[in-house]
Image (cartoon, rainbow over all chains, first blue to last red; front, side, top):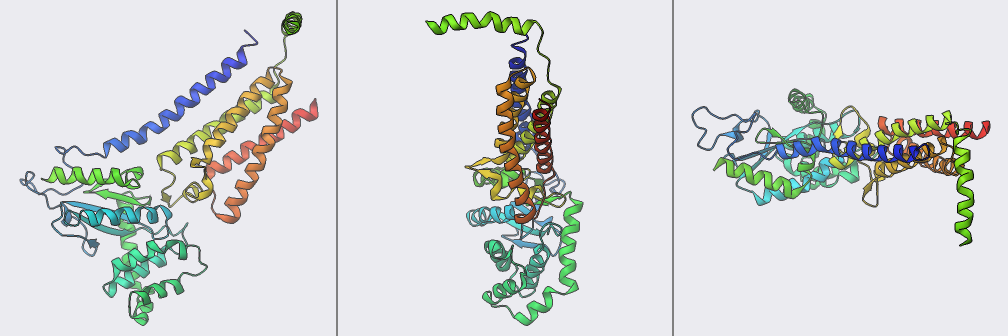
Length: 239
Length: 159
């Protein structure tokens, strides 16, 4: 018995380790399933007009004024993203969202909120201001796309400003105005307002994505097929 | 045939050794086994965090996202933490066997701990100078491996 004891202990620990790992994985799976809304279940947080629950609810109008939106105002699905231009997972998610936006052109509306992680990403706040400064000249989304597409180029640069100016030039912006705006208090406040709204909603990391007001699990956002299925369900629920 | 005869001759002697006197359980190896368990729990947590994608998300408070989301956190498509979990489980098994008197397990444990320590130093370098971000769970693992080194050295010194 004494000779077998170490083997029994080792096998016992192996079983406990495997069970522990499976248990830890489990909550994430539950969350993942929970995010798949049943068409008959009303989505929490989305504002439904009382008495009109059987008609298409005006979900897309629930975003705060001044929010950057892309897509049709009557789209049944609103996808809101809190993101940081310097965050690698946000850069990873960007092409997935772009692809879905083009596939669901009339049914999906996308809102973007800044959530720069200032303590970990040194150029994040400046990148957010660069997008806002481009927005003053009507090119927010073009700069938004460019910042994500060129993320690898600027995220580790000692200073990002020269690269942001290059992108502004590519977009045909008035560089003098862009430079003035990027350092303006108004632009800085816009970014901070987004951060405040995100913090109020419980955002702690990026990307955080809401689909018609429901927060999605990270693994659902990074998977094109899952996110597509979730969008399909939302569309079906609104029909 | 001679092997069987030899086995038959050895077994009673081994059994006799086991019974009188009973082998003393090494306290240092027991401590190494407990520490390896802590390391195993830490590595399993990190593996699950990685596989579920939770730690890969960038967060305000922790450098874990920077570290676990980096290309260094993956080896051949598998999370590095999974390799850590396997290493800690092996260390636990060897320490347990060594605690019950297996000299060979003690030798293998010393070799494994040396390899784990070399890996730890590399990962600490990556966190400090390449990623410039620290993950507290990775630092805990580094501390555990360092303690394992101390225990193995202490055990060998007191032999």
